[in-house]
Length: 180
Image (tube, rainbow, N blue to C red; front, side, top):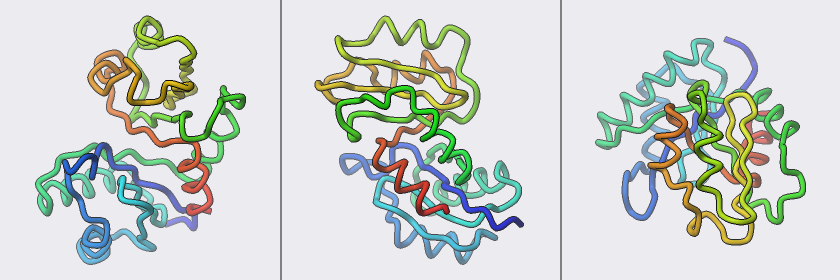
């Protein structure tokens, strides 16, 4: 095990009363039923902070299975190490975004499908911008905000061909600090 910490990011939990995963209960279960150490959570949207487990893919699978068994929620678990979170922040393609809460990073489980960006660009509203940086899709929702966008979960999933979970820039900065 290394001394580096990481974030295990859950997709679409505790959103509008759906996919309920109580963070306090999850922390307890993770500490009692997995080999994860240094477990904490940040806000209810599904951000688990822990020591790097070494075999990150095995840890992701174990956490996903535990959440499905304990809460009846099957959600992708996407991992980013502290170094990966810092790199994402440094590679921000939209430093001029109007507001941190409108700029999101969608962390993907793996590489996006060929042609994904081209397909998504056709759905952009005026002022919106996207950029794929490695396995991170940056979305600047501009003034209209997330709820007005045509980049819905279904549209993103179809174009990208891989699961992902988004966090706004403010949250990504906090995750980088918490994994330090």
